[in-house]
Length: 334
Image (tube, rainbow, N blue to C red; front, side):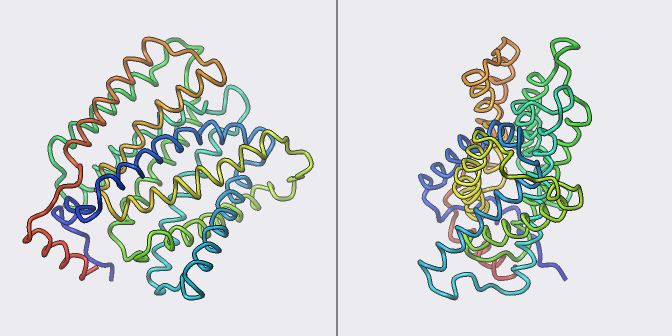
């Protein structure tokens, strides 16, 4: 039988015992580094097989993090209950194999089929809206202003993605693939607060990365990627991009994201999906000369307004003694 879901009060007070400075530092890391990973993925898949590159990324990052934890904490650092291991594996598959893997596939096609990195980031911005819908479907009641914030953010997303002409149309199959990735990521993020996960977010990250890498490797093998993979044919540019994804995207940003899921309201955490597109658009303009049009500026302004509304509604609050007791009882039942 699955463990009971936390109540709305428990979700609202998540992170109340954590310093706001730490939460905001982790959020900024996720905002900036994950915004840059879309361009990193695009460069990596220029000469690397898409799912193979993703499997390598998470396998290496998970192994490094596991080694660090074992060296710092001893042989028992990674010990968890079987149920916790299964939960971490499930979340890892949803986040990394489903969420990240599908984005990598969407960005790896030929011109006219592949989704540009900036557009991929924009489509992933549906995550906060999907998370709120999941909360509502399971009996939670997010504040009205949270609904207003994610809706406003979605309006900004539409303004950004809406093509200015037929030549600017987003590839339909690629776009749907990214939407499927956003859905998988939303479900994984949502479940991470509802099922019995390892208490230590860093340990949870190790098992999530290992599970995600294993599934990605199996699917890559099924697609024939491993058979056709010749490391000598991979460009230095792609190898460097993969290294950046391993360190910045996985070891640093993903670990920060998992920590945030344990310490901050999920609607606040998921606002990264509104900031990442702005970072992606800026990098596109700086590094590959993508134009910043008035439409981009308008959509970006609406997105920022949505983020501000969600943040002001969902920011961690210091609970009363009664609220803390209720939260503790919820955690004891999980």
